[in-house]
Length: 224
Ligand code: DC
Image (cartoon, rainbow, N blue to C red; front, side):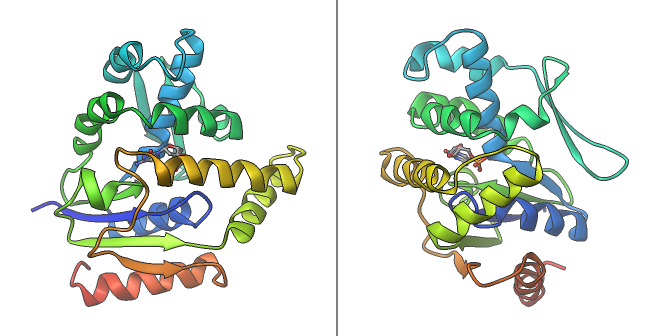
């Protein structure tokens, strides 16, 4: 049986790093579902399809030519139509497009099949907003990571500074807040903890402390 661990929560809560490290430690596959929405946002912009035009977004969602590769150094490279878009995918601009395309039911259904295909032996760590509620409701373990908005904006600020991008912390905080609101208040698959999810507030924790807490839970659940 394929073991599935879902990790949901708002942006900046530490889902990505925690999920990637957890997957590596367990030898499981990793699904970055946010990357699928980001890729669709990029494809839409490239094809000049408006993010509110759900009819024309659906065929793009079904047919976009994407690949996830792991480099020898263990880094994940994301290719769109053969082109490495890993860096472009991480910008706030792409995140906003992703959050907009993600609000359509038809788009989410089109991406559902693609997401479920990642569930292969021995197991999967699935990172996103609705992994435990919609995509993998039967997952053996569901985690929900949160952190205060100030801390999440600060983490994002640091990430962008490290990449050499200059941004204002205030502007970033309002972008994070706007994205949270759109993700939490949408009618379809809103960002919400599954009723059987274990919640971890990471505001005061380092990434190693989050991973240790998660590994303890995984051990207790008999998943390693
Ligand atoms: O995790 P992320 O920041 O890469 O996600 C980008 C956007 O995609 C996020 O603002 C909302 C959307 N998303 C979603 O609706 N459902 C998911 N499972 C993952 C992401």
